[in-house]
Amino acid sequence: MTADTPRAQLIHIETDRRLGHEWDEWDGRPLPGNGDFSAPPGLFFGFAALTIGIGMAVGAALIFLLGPRLGTLWAMLPRTLWLALGAVSAATWLWFGTLLLSFYGGMLALYGGMLALPEGWLERGPYLRLMSLTSSVSRAFGKRDWVEHAAIDVYNTLAERRRRTVGKGELLVLIPRCLSKQALDGVLAIAGRYDVPVFVATRGQLARRVIRERRPRAVVAVACERDMMTGLRDVAGRLPVLGLTMRLPNGPCRDAMLDLDVMEEWVRGLVGA
Image (cartoon, rainbow, N blue to C red):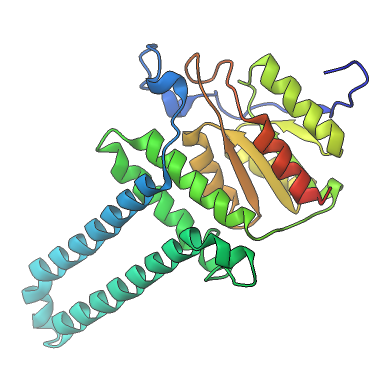
């Protein structure tokens, strides 16, 4: 980076919690894959199908166990509940099939076709809840970080296909304070080229406060998979977000790296440069 390369202003704000609480169980040993949890989208879809199946099975078990007692209240109640569960199951699997079509049918979405559902019914709607539930299920199999990475990639792919553009003053970049100097310099250089502000903030109340005060029309956020999942759940339902995950070669919350080419592609696309 040359001396005359424009750099964005880096705005620090006080944190409302200590960083890294999602990694309380970390024992200090090197992370798997040198902190790179990249995984194919199919890993998420497989665990998502398992999550939906578990949810339907739990519902069926409850109706089966409670049915006789519920029948004393109204003889038709158990049957009504079974019909309702069947309807919910059919609607859920239909939506899941539509999600698969929207993701894997990308060429249709780009050329004259469409994403099968509006964003409020897809990546910024039920998908956010499915991501959260699937993350919980994947923990039991020791695959949390890989499944979350795949889920975030799917979300970003769907969000990118909306081809949204905003003004330079309407885009906000949020980063954590655990980036390496090289990564931080790269982020500031990109933001400087496109004249967008960069805030150092954690997730939760702090990120929501920045968004509330700045009122952006879109956000590019950087975080590890665990914090990104929470951030998307908190914000993406109300505001378009693209979430860039990091590599953690030195463990969580220290000297994190990111793909600067992807960040520049996102920022350039959003500001229509």
